[in-house]
Image: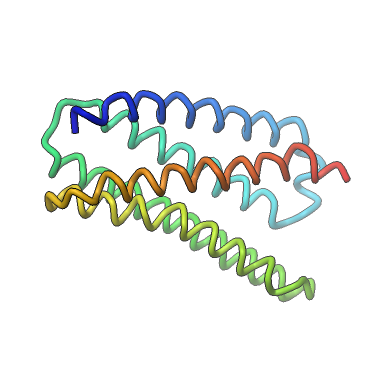
Length: 161
């Protein structure tokens, strides 16, 4: 994994910065965010994704075997997947209760799965020595960054509309 060290450094820094952005967005707009029961859950899921990426960046820099690193990433992926799955169930229940468009809840599920499953599966593949593992991990990291920027936009700008 030594050839990926620059990637892990960049990922850890970017994840920390984006997590800070979302935490600031929540703190600045907390009164508006709590008016919508699904938004605190979505914010928590976004922060979880970014902290997961931060953790995999940090663990990727530690001197250890690929098997151990892969197992760590898989555990991080499972935890993030559980948080996103719980958030998705919550958002779906709220959407049904409020008669919101079904596509909104399904989009939330899809975004969560596209972030967490590549990280989880990438960790497993790295642990068993498959060369595709780091690339799957890369896809998950890109998805986390893309989708959490969308969440940051919602928490900073859309909430005020």
